[in-house]
Length: 273
Image 1 (tube, rainbow, N blue to C red):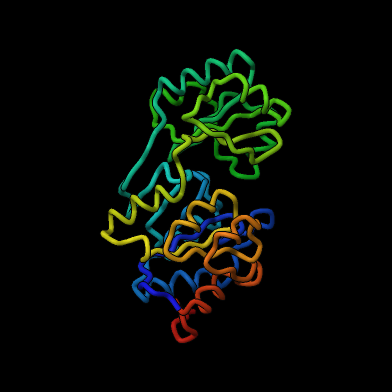
Image 2: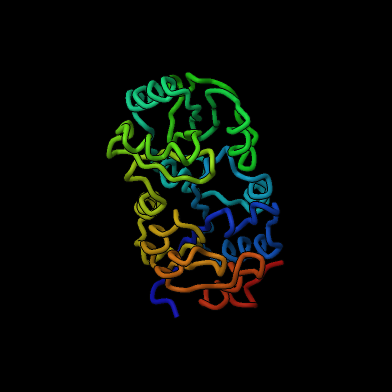
C-alpha cells in the first residue's frame, strides 16, 4: 500500500499515544515501539510539549523502549540520542519586549525551555491551566537571561484576546494558540512540527516520503499533511482528518497498532510482546 519504505514514524503524545485526562497509555503501545525497532524503523515523538513536561508514563515508555528521537515544542527543539539536531530559541530582546508589556498589564507568563518551565508568579489561574500538564515548574521571572527559551505561555482569559491582538505586542513574528481558558501558547510564527521533521529528515539523509506520522490535533495539521504518509486518529479533529492519508481507530481502541497493521508497516508476525 505504501510507495516508499518507512524509516521513521513520528507520534504525537496527547490523545495519540496517551489519553491525557485519564492518564492512560494503551497497553499495545510498548509492543508497537518494540516491533518497529526490530524492523529497523525509528520510532519518534513529535509534540507541542517540552521534554521537561512529558507525562510520567511517556517518560517510562521512553526509558523502557529506548525512544531516542524527539521533535518537541512544535519543532523548536529537535534531538536524537541526546544530541541537538536543530533548535530555535527566541531572541532575548524579543522576550524582553514582550514581558515588559506583560508586567505593565499584570499578565503572568512562563518560559518554556528544554529542561525547565519557569513562571513569573504562581496564581490560581496559572495553576488551573498548567498543573494538568505538569507541576514541575518554579518561579524565576528572569530565567530567560541565562537559558534558551523556545516558547512562552501567557496567562490571560479569552476576553483579553482582542486586547492582546490589537496591542501589536507580538507583531507578525509570533503567533498565539489558546489551549486553556486562562492560557495561550506564544510561538515563533514559522515554528511547526513539520519544520522540525524536515531538520530530522535532512540529518538522516532521508526524504519526507520515508516518514510516517500519527496525530490528532490542530497543531498536527502541518505535520500530517507534510509527511509521506499522514495518519489521523479516529478521535482526531475533523480538520486533521481532511488532510490525512489514512484515518485509523481512536486511541482507546488501539488506533496506532491498527493503523500500522492496516498500512502494512507491521504484520501480526512482527508483534513482539
